[in-house]
Length: 63
Image (cartoon, rainbow, N blue to C red; front, side):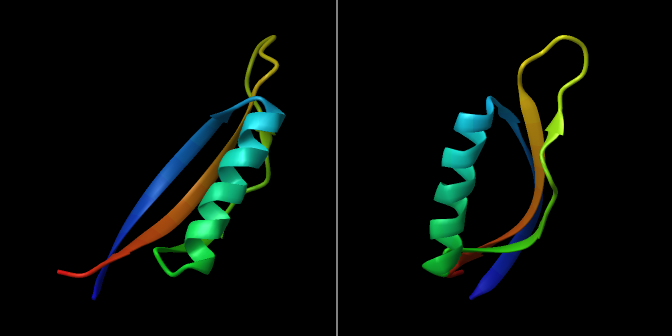
């Protein structure tokens, strides 16, 4: 099995980010991915009501 590391930015409402972070967390628990690093939520610039989270993830797949 090899891993493929990426950096990912999620951007959305607080509720949407919580759902996506839950989903990625479940993939981590099942061994499909490994979360290497996760930032806190940062508010987007300007008058946006959305936030962003940065993730560094390994995708664990069979080659």
